[in-house]
Length: 395
Image 1 (cartoon, rainbow, N blue to C red):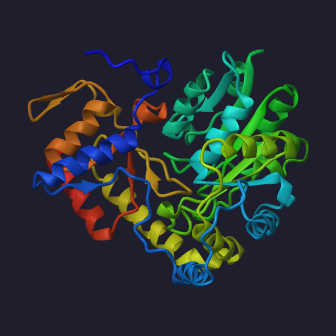
Image 2: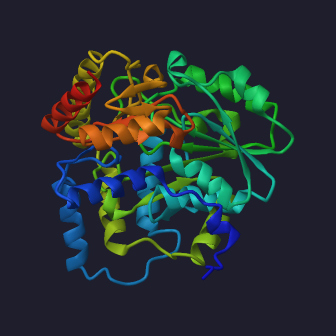
């Protein structure tokens, strides 16, 4: 029996990160001792001061539908945060709160992209960017980079990728999956190219901004002549260990914010009321309140780089943000290990899952076919054991 699904859903790939996580759970259910380094989710609990704000909201009987674009008090708090952390001025009518940053990105793409438009994706890029562009019937164009360039694109590459059909570019710094952080100087050099192409809008995904190790991220909207063309995306999932609370938001030109509100009004309406009340406390908190998590991530990063650096065939850079390492493992391509031929990163990632019981994600999913992603949002004990297993099966 055929299943008459839409072309839209048939054209949509499954998220590789979620697929690997599901495969890891399946093997765990079979009794295998799987260490999962596949999901980008902090292993900390949400800080108590945020949980207390949520409990207070429950006790105050916040239980009704919320405004589609978010509580005014939360939007005002987000404006304070943008000015404090990013030196960008937004007013509440430029803010839209959504059910996670992923919905924010989907809203933006839906309201700006038409069939046939082109979206530039500096690679590596987060897995959902390409899928979201595909859903909008747009064409995504990868701009490749490599570990030698610290996974950054150049102004010359950007210029060469632009065509009359280019409508958007997605930037993500600190980057998932590479941990790369663009400096202000590097962003301004890219902006010089975009100045010549006023039809192009910039989506700046800054969800990992607080998880950085000395190189402070710079907001693209802080570039004066880019402000009116930039949509800044952020949220609470990563820095505040609030993945399941599902709160993301944008700062954008008012006409784009209004369009996103209109789109969201027909899909999910407003974000969860309790999560929003807690989010007010989170965004107004000084970033130093979550520095203990950042310090721990940095310690884990250094451990992972040290241990992986001792495995022949792993080529590494030093990620300056987020909580991932993204080694080039192309040295293993064409080799047979434990009677299994490694043709590409997909094979290598699956080999590690089946032979070492360690879940990673293939770089193919991120537009970087020579790499794999490992998340170090896991305990030091798990990280040491996982890399020990990897070293053993490769030796």
